[in-house]
Image 1 (tube, one colour):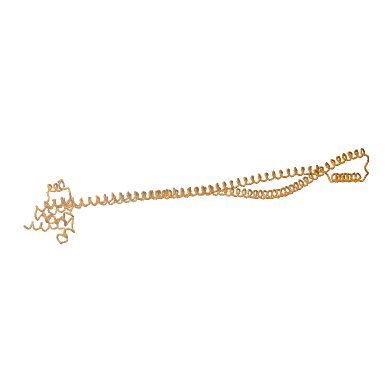
Image 2 (cartoon, rainbow, N blue to C red):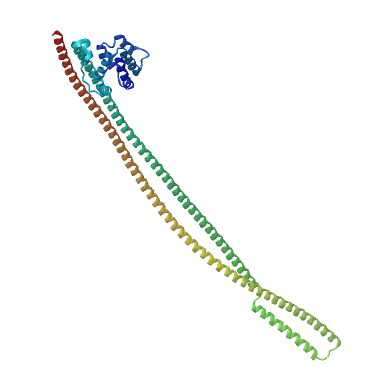
Amino acid sequence: MEDEECWVQLEEYRLLLIKTIEPSQITPYLRQCKVLSCDDEEQIFNDPNLVVRRRKVGALLDILQRTGRKGYVAFLESLELDYPQLYHKITGKEPARVFSILVDTVGESGLTQFLMNEVTRLQKGLQEERRRRQEATAAAAAQEDAVRQHQVRERELRKQQERVHRMREEKGRLWEEVRHLKDENYSLMRDVTKLSEEKNSALMSARDLQLEIEKLKHCLMNAESDSKIRTVKLKNAMEQRPGQDRMLQLQRHNHLLTARIQDLEASAQGTAPAPLDQERLSVESLEDYKQHSQAQHQELVNNIYTLRRDLHDAEALRNRYLEANEVLDLKCTTLKKDAKMYRDRMEGILKQMDEVIRERDKAIASREEYHQENCRSLQDKDQYRKQIRELGERCDELQVQLFRTEGEIIALQTRLHRHTCSQHDKSQTSEEDCKDKLTKGKKSMTSDK
């Protein structure tokens, strides 16, 4: 009944025990106290149904519960040995470590043997823990080495990325410069084309003005030739017209004939009648003479009329020729003035063309000089940019070498630290071996006694 009460009290902490206890840690003490057999231990650790640690702890508690109070006390002493805080929580007492069950079961020699075994187990655990710590330290050092290597690689990668970024920026800037130069080249070509078109238009205007001047010269020559021809015709007509002396002579002859006719008529009227035959003859002769005189007079009158008409026509023609000559003189003067004006204008245009050509040549020379200077500046800029790029690449290579050297230094420091730790662990292991030998010697001396 008392055994059941003990285990009933312990049932309140069953979940905490199952959650906290490691079976392999308390089974050696329970086996020394003979509350746990080899079969029970085999069942706990090798049963396929007890794979989970908590199930193993539950099975262990069930096996110990069957042993009664002895199992309860042995279990509490194992907790007192391995889980003092849990023991204090369950019992409310501080661990005393009297091991009464073990002393009652196997005696003091068994307790000593158990303690030696526990010390050996703890030393092995400590060695195992040191080995794991060394492995963990080596793994941590390897991880740190790997991390440093990754950091070095990351720095190299970052440096390469920065370099790629700079190259991309430089590429973009160069593309912008190329586009700007293309635009400038297009503008220069447009200006050159515009100047060429202006030159061609100026040449065409000069050619048109030259053609117009040639036409005006041709018109002037035609007008001069027409004026000369008309002047010659007028001169010939005036030369063919009867002269003033001839007109006076004809008028005088006409007046003489008129006076003679009048005398004859007067003499005929004043003389006495002659004989009939003589009278008839004289009358006939007078009639003949009269008719002849009248015919001559009529002829002279006709000649005078014809001459007067020719004179009038000649005067009218002369007046018309004079008017035409004046008009032609005016036209010739106007054409001469126009020709002079056009010639002066053409000379001014040619002078302006010469000035434009000189300005154009000067502008072309300035543009060529600016273009050459720009080409030299671009060449110097490309050379400086190439030097900067080479220096940047050299700087990047030196930084990469620096990173690699730092990585190698870190790796060497890690190896040195690892070697130092291994030497320290070896010295500690040798000291522990010496202590183990001393402990075994004391144990053998105790067993001999």
